[in-house]
Image (cartoon, rainbow, N blue to C red; front, top):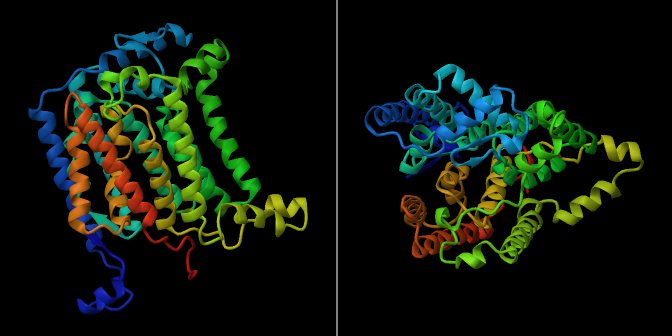
Length: 418
């Protein structure tokens, strides 16, 4: 079910191609996947009924914004108040302008978005030398894009675009696009800790500062209409990290009693677990080549002979491999998924496209990888979720995480042997 294109030289020789010539078969297969999935998306739009969930609420919120409302506490829809940053309003205002607020043309637009997103993901897979045939096999993700029209679709497409830029070491532009993704939905921040650690490995402290400053400027510019009028209302609603989701809609931790599910104690425990797991992976996996996270940080200060050198000099070596960048970002996000208190059905799009990549980073036998993939997909397609389905999902998430923890660490740098 998976094709790894490592060892292309030996494969080329066996196929009669000149040694060192690029193996284009992954590109051809990726193109085939795109065409096949484009046809499937068209069939879904044509024959599967649209499901009304948040579209009307999105349009109501956009209407309030376009009519001049800038107080976030007064921008609401039939499913509740607006809780997304300003980028969401700009994106869906543009969608309303293009589609007239009609569902069918919006579905076509989201179908195009689905193919653009898939193209970006396939590029990530090809450039990291893994191409997996499972990327088009999710009923739930197709539904999220073309039958539900969720804002998660735009956020994750921009996130994948940012990752493409970053694997090509376009850090500054990548951070700007990353910030744009955050402005549509804050779940993208689950990638932020691992992205920050990668920046420390690849950039000078001055470079990290200016990249983060660029990302912050994007948020300020997008939020100016609200920051100049009702700043407290905007920040408290758009960047509320303490929201408690409804127990009924959660796909994970459904086996936990509702009273405990909404408690601050569980939230704090999961946050501590999240941060601890990130630290363990950072120290023992992502910075293993450098002797651990703390030794790496110490070396940045030890090797600097002056404040100017500390701020301006990059670590040596500093050119990260594409595989390492994708692995660290995908795993960092997955850790956040495992430790999330509530996952609604559309949240599956947050990590589905990384799931085959993560499974093939483990040393599980291929049948086990496929069983885990199918099992996760099955849990996300059980409606409503049950205590048993959420417990099974948690078990499979933890199994994948353990497999990643026990897998060998990839070479983090370009042209440098460990």
